[in-house]
Image (cartoon, rainbow, N blue to C red):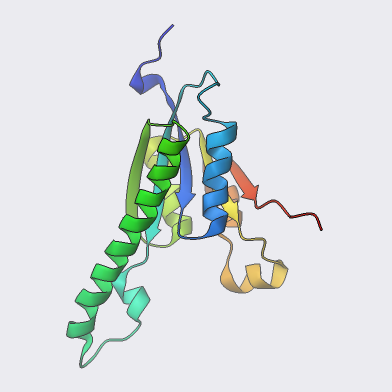
Length: 162
């Protein structure tokens, strides 16, 4: 029986320019969306773009010249990250892919995307921070595991055996 587009469950994958994000996307493509599996999923890649004000952190003389440059740079980075992620999907023969670039804190952006698209699963990479770094920097995966209203898969980067 064929599945219509509206019946497909949505899997949201948080992407950024890190190896941890790439690993999480590859894991999703290999384990949940491989062409050999009979799946009824639609893949949504979500990139949380930092705001210009958060990236610059200053206002005053000279800000009006700097802000457009920073804005253009943030857009260029977002385009590069999303294109690289879409290329990985196409190389793995996964073509039912959408991309959403949203400005804001990745924790909030990912949970909002889950709600907006009624996702069945959220996949994020783990940076492997210890308790202290997690407390200081905050953990996107930890926040999402507690606040996203769907299943959350936290993909750890495999450790290389010595």
